[in-house]
Every structure is written in structure tokens, then in C-alpha cells.
Image (cartoon, rainbow, N blue to C red; front, side):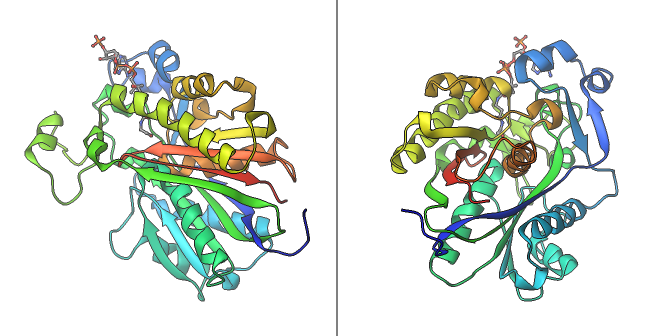
Length: 333
Ligand code: UT7
């Protein structure tokens, strides 16, 4: 029974920000030994957006945050907490969350960064729900901002074709009972962490040896190990939150997965037994933007009218750590 009492927790507003600069597959053909055909066939990616050399990542975060607050109809002063998810902060200190809190004028908000790699937005959504459920906070701004182009080895064709930059933001807050987040699944397997690494201030010999070129502070990935983990985990994590919400796949309007590779998404959809028409894909436009993929895709899906009030949607992510997280949300707007 749905009542108008606001005891649910859901997404009140969304925003996204992508840099202007576009890097196409044919641009990459001039940089490394690759082809548009290989990239499209193996990943589905056609282009990605990149930050300019001297452009701070927080700029995208601020833009996405302002749009999300406008969409939610709340002011920066009403935000109680800013959580930024990123694996590529402009600074280690101050945190990206403090930088963005200051720039948007959320002067009543606490602020911290959360790094769960590509699962970051989903982890932050879970954290936000706990704070709101307990009544400790009312409005939480999550800003997922990622500048993967800064940690990519542009001479390594195995990784440089995959990633892009961008930001997505969401205001999380109270919604009508029966709407909002219905179930959550979240997990990690640190024993598999060596499969995706980005060294920062320390690096062991094994990780140094994996990097062929001069710049060692770059992303390295065992693509096929991550691929298998991703297909398995996305199917499991989606099924889990659907079952925990006492629903079946037929009740789900749309699944919005992390956008790493269209073949991973297709593999997970096949394993789940859902038609691809129920799965949102935009990896062709932006490549893999780590934790920003899901809020950007969700924002697009809402803008396109694919999600309306009362629809059940599943958000599901996986990534470095290795980590995974999912949520079943009954859309409340
Ligand atoms: O956000 C979470 C983190 N990341 C992921 O989820 C990524 C998961 N993994 C993947 O998406 C895929 O494994 C990749 C797209 C990274 C690679 O696709 P794959 O089908 O697993 O290819 P592969 O790594 O097995 O490589 C196949 C061949 C190799 O050549 P040989 O050894 O067969 O001669 C590679 O050297 O393709 C070659 N190759 C390329 N060729 C042209 C690798 N990268 C490229 C490239 N262009 N960019």
C-alpha cells in the first residue's frame, strides 16, 4: 500500500557533465596499432570524451552537481553531505568532495571521497540510504567524477581504447513510502584486486613490471579475467536485488548496467535471460567512465522518457577492487 508519507529513500534529481573534446576510434588508429573494426567488435565503443590537458576534473563534478540540485529543486544549503566517487582525484588533499562542496556553496554539508572504482556510485547510494534511513541526514549529493584519460597509458592499445572522462550526479533524499530504493547488494573480493590496478604513491615490483612504458602510474588490467567476473557478477547482483524486492524479471522496466563493454552487458543479459531492449547501453558514445557510467546512463534514460514514476529499475555495477553493487529502485518522480 503506497502512502504519501516520505519514509522511502530515492533519487530526487540527476545531472551529468561530459567534456567537449571527442576522441574517436579513427583518432586512436593514428596513436596505436588498433582499428575501428577491432574496437567496435570487441567493446562496442565508438568514441569517448576527454578532459583538456589543464582542465580540472572538479569542473565536471560541479556542473553535474548543480544540474542535479536544480533537477531535485533544492538549494546547495539544503545538502547535508557530499560524497564524491572517483579513482582519479585532482588532489589527494583536499578531497574532491571538499573541493566540490566549496565550489557549489554547500556550506552545511560534510564531505568525503569514496573509492570503490567503477562500483563507486552504487556504493555511495548505499551509504546515502543508511544516513537517510536513520534520520541523521535528509539530502545527500553524490557526485561521480572520473578522469580516466589521466591514468591511461596512451601507448598501450589494450587499455587506452576503453576509457573516457565525465561526471554524473544524484541528489538522494526522502520519497513517498513504497518508492525509491527497495533492495541493495554490495560486495568485494580483494583477492582478485590485482586484475585491475592503478598505482599511486607506492607500487610493488610485480606491478612495475607489468607496465612497459616510462610512466608507471597508469592503469593495467587483465581484461579477460575481469570480463568473466563482470558477466557472472552483474547477472548475480541483478537477480539478487530483484528477488530481494519480491519481484521477477518481468516486473523490471529497465536495467542500467556499468558501461565497460557491450559484450559484457550482452553476456550478462543473456545469462539473466532478459532481452537487450530492457538493458540501457551508451558505451558506444563515452566508453568506460568508471563510477560515472551509471548516473550518466540513468540521467539519459530518464531524459529519454524510458523511466517513469512507478517503474522498477535495476542499477548494477562492477569494477576494480574487485567490487560489485546493485540496487532495485521504484522510480519516484
Ligand atoms: O570497468 C571495469 C574494468 N574493465 C572491464 O570491464 C574490461 C573487461 N574486459 C574487456 O572488456 C575485454 O577483455 C577487452 C576489451 C579488454 C579485451 O577484449 P578480449 O576479447 O578479451 O581481447 P584479448 O585481451 O583476449 O585480446 C585479443 C587480441 C590479442 O592479440 P593476440 O594475442 O590474439 O594476437 C590482443 O593483443 O586482441 C589484441 N588487442 C588489440 N588489437 C587491436 C588488444 N587490444 C587491442 C586493440 N586493437 N586495441
